[in-house]
Amino acid sequence: MANYTPPAEFILTGFSATRELQKILLAPCLALYLVMIAGNASVVAMISFDSRLHSPMYFFLCNFSVAEMLVTSTVVPRMLVGLVAERDTIPFGQCLAQFYFYFSLGTTVFLLMAVMSIDRYVAICHPLHYSTILTDNVCIQLALGAWATSFFSMIPPAVLRARMPFCHSNQIDHFFCDNAPLLKLSCSDTHLIELWDFLLAVLFDLSSFAVTVTSYVAIIVAIVRIPSATGRQKAFSTCASHFTVVVIGYGTTIFIYVRPNKNYATDMNKMVALLTAVVTPFLNPFIFTLRNEKVKEVFKDWLGHLRGL
Image (cartoon, rainbow, N blue to C red; front, side, top):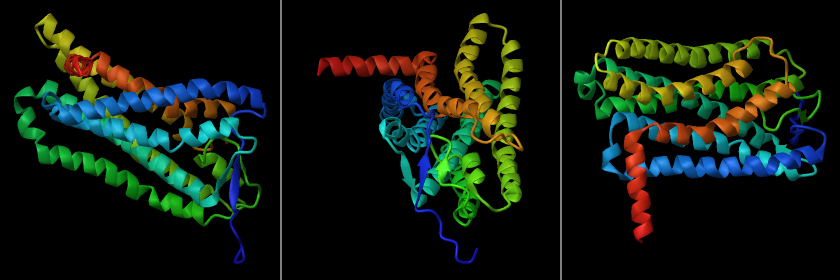
């Protein structure tokens, strides 16, 4: 393998060999992507420029929206081009870069979910100490920790794939450079790499999921003990949106990635990956804003201001 030369490019096979079926997916996927960008960008703008939303909860939500836009943008624009292209190819270096940023940004999203659940736990279970526990410095450290941990942890997997010999084929049976389809093309023993990937998934996905579930269990117990029916309803309303995002996000990711001996590049995996990359980020801005009275109030004020211009 000393004289091994990596392939110049990979061919992404997409969803189906039938070009007509892929073209049908173009319009809805493009529409969902554009609405997702607009929705998350609006959330970021409102949180950044309106002082009513300058609190830890919305600071973490702002980071979450930025991460959602970035992780989706690493996959969807190329996927849209591939849906109409006669032959969808991606250079070797771009494929590895897409792999690295997709999984590092995806890990950031899950770590931020865990941080947001901790924020809700402190707000509901320890409301009198909320401002002293989640200070500005603590919030910044938690957010930076989520971003930095994700990006540094994904360097070894990316380097390992850059050094792998790909000699079986240069066709990736997927619409982006996903983990399992890449490993399938290698002619070397990938068991240790798969084990490393599985341990990373357990470390970040399952551990953040455990933190999130533990926080919400404590929150539910605290809400049940609230004597006022109005107070219970308000607390449940605040947390319901977060919990919906958690169920959708973790459910799809655990299905695809937190499984040893995965069945490589099945059609089911592709559809679930499409749900994770397009549909879930599209829903998140609506889930957070439609169930949040303060965000709706700010949004209405902004719309009124725009109409007055």
